[in-house]
Every structure is written in structure tokens, then in C-alpha cells.
Image 1 (spheres, rainbow, N blue to C red):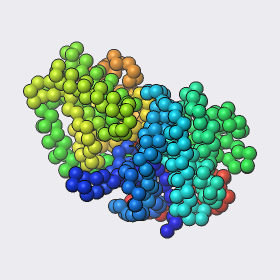
Image 2: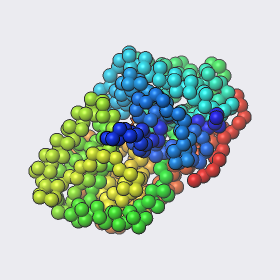
Image 3: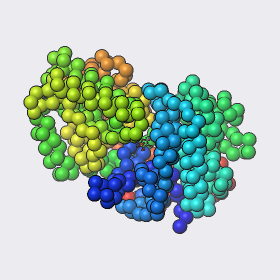
Image 4: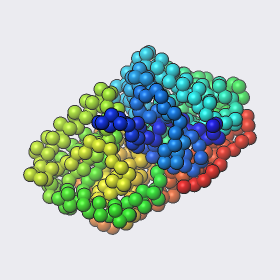
Length: 476
Ligand code: F6P
């Protein structure tokens, strides 16, 4: 049955996993995109198309927890060329300031084009006449144009969840023009920060030659495309409710006791990704112990590293490096029953995460580059008592909004040490003053506000030839 709203993302909100006994089940997919879009879909009564994470070819449309889901199949070659290759071996490092070296392979590009074509064709089938299609993220940048060619009646939005790089970096891409033209198929192209939108408009002017004015691009066929920033957020109320539940209170106490009741608990929680700056933050923490500022009775570090992109070599190397470092730190500074770093290579449920956020006195979020970083916002949402210190990288999109965090440059280890120490030593008043201001920001700008502002800007675009305007069907 066709729908009035179609969400197109690389992943479904759930992954199909094969258990040890050969049976299959569904688990929640990692990453911020899923956390952000799920409440939107519930609010607008649409369908979500995406890849369930495996190579099964026989999956039908289904419902999970009240969400209508359309699984997109991928072959092993698609995964290698489109997902691990072009998306995560080329675009991911290129869009994250070359934190790792991007690789440019023509076969990866071909696979990217093919998979984008398949997604566009499937979206065209799922969409009602004059429907709204919202395409997400860097894995699907060609879909807007392909979809417009198939279905000119649709209103098409695109949102990029990761940074959009400056022209100086983007223009390395051999297929830069195709990507820009792909995105220009949308009526509205959304970015995390104004800088990303400006980079895009400038590139369109320079590389494609279209006329632009501020956030508008004028296409030769008379259409206009708007490029603007819509900083993404979280379900702040939902996180606060989880973190203040009696279960979370009890669980947080259990965690603290299990950690040996230290004076301060530091917490990091990230997908195990080289952009996240996990290595540098652990080094900074261990040097503070070495320098005698505190020992393992005073402070421990809990690092949750969510498994991610495990077939990509850079990620395998990173895991080895971090695990070697954790071993070294614990070998040098730990005592029996008292490691300095508690390292968990696992994915935790939202309930368990809320309990960890509740336990953490200092939350450490230090990416080298990050579109937004929702972990930082989740932590703030969970601190209902206005306590807890956030150490945050200047290079996370969230730093634009969470100005009262202890902001750090993750490339500067001494600066990071100073910030961790300041957060560790800060008095209650100081911590509360900062947290209060950050909580105001996060609660007033939650994911619903984000989605509504994107959707109403999309509804207001002049590019589509129809008048149908999508408004929320219900709010959960
Ligand atoms: O935010 C960027 C992103 O790639 C999202 O698209 C995704 O939800 C998340 O990171 C996790 O990545 P992956 O889908 O590769 O596991």
C-alpha cells in the first residue's frame, strides 16, 4: 500500500541477526540516525525503507513495534562496494576532515550508483501520488535526483546527518559533480550546521555553475532548492523519563558499587569509530593518574564502545589500538579488582544507557569531527537534578548549542587533560550552573522540534508542482 510519507535511510531501525542456534531475531541498529528518525515516523504515520544489515533476499514489508518497515536487500557485493567501500571507505573519512585517508575506487562508485538506483526505484513504488519522501544521509546522496526523474510529483527532502566538508576537501572526490547534482534533486537539503549548508551552496555555484542567493539554488528548469541547517536532537523527555525511573535509580547505584564506589565516574560512549577520539581521551585520563591528580580509588573511566563497521580495515585497526591502550593503562594503574578503565565492547539498551548516564559524574565526548553527537545531548537530558559535567569537543556539532560544556580541542592532549581535571574538580555550583543552561537548550530543542521544523520547511518549498502538504498524523 503506498504511503504519504516515505522515509528512505540506509538502515532500518532494526537489524536482522542470526543467533548461535541458527534462529533469527531483530535488534535495534546502532547510531544517532535511528534514534532521531524513529519518533518522527511514529508522529507522521509513514513507512521506513532501509537495509536490515544482512544479505537475506527474501524479506517482506513488516511491522515492528508499530512501525511500518520495508527491508531493502543487499548482496555481499553491494555491502562491500556501497556500504563498506564508497560510503564508509570514501565518503565517511572525506566528510570527516580526512581523519582517516579516503580511498577512491571506481568499482565502489559503480556499486554506490547501483544501490542508490535501487533505493530510488523502491521509494518511487512506496510513495502515494504527491507524497513526501525524506531521504537520509551520505549513503543515499544520489537518490533525490533519481527519484525526481521517476516521480516528478513528489516533494523530496534530504537530510545529511554527518558534516558536509569545505570545498577544499570535497573537490578531491572524482564524482563530486554527480553527488552535488544528486542532492539537487531534493526540494530541501538539510544539514546539521549552517557551515555545511554554506559549503554546499558554494560548491554548487563553483562546480555546477548554478545561480545561488543565500540559501537558495536556482536551477535552469525553474526549480529552486533550499539548503539550510536543522540541528538534529533527541527525545529529551523520553531520556529524562528513563533516567529518573526507579529502575534506573537502582541500576545506577548498582553500577557505582560495581565500579568500587569511586569519588568520580568518567564515561565515554561511542560507536567504535576513528572519528570519535576515544584513544586520545583515554590517554588524557591515564596521564592524569600518572601525574598524580587522582588514582583509581578516586576516579575510574567507563568506555562503552559499540561495535561498528567491523569488516572495514580502519575499524579493525582502531579496535586493536584502543584495546592495547586499555590493557596498558590497566596494567600500569589498575589494582586487583580495580581497573582504571572499564571497557565494554558492546551495544547497550536505552534503559541501560540511561542508567550509565545517571551514574556518570563526567561525560567525555571528544570526536575529531562529528555532525552533531547525540550522546552529548542524551547525557544532558538524563541529568534531571542539574548535576553532571560534560566535556565536549569543539568539533562536534553539539558544541554550537552546548556552549556551557567544558569545550576541548581533541588534538590538544594537554588541553584535554586540563578540561578533564577541571570537570573532575568543579564545585557543585559551577556544575549546576552549566548543566541548567544546557538542559534548557536540549529540552526546548528536541527531536520533535527538529523534525517539525524540517517538515514544515519542506512543505513550504516552492519546488514541487503540487499542493499536498503533510502534517503530523499523531504524536506519540
Ligand atoms: O550518523 C551517521 C551514520 O552512518 C548513520 O547513518 C548511522 O545510523 C550510524 O552512523 C551508524 O552507522 P552504520 O549504519 O554504518 O552502522
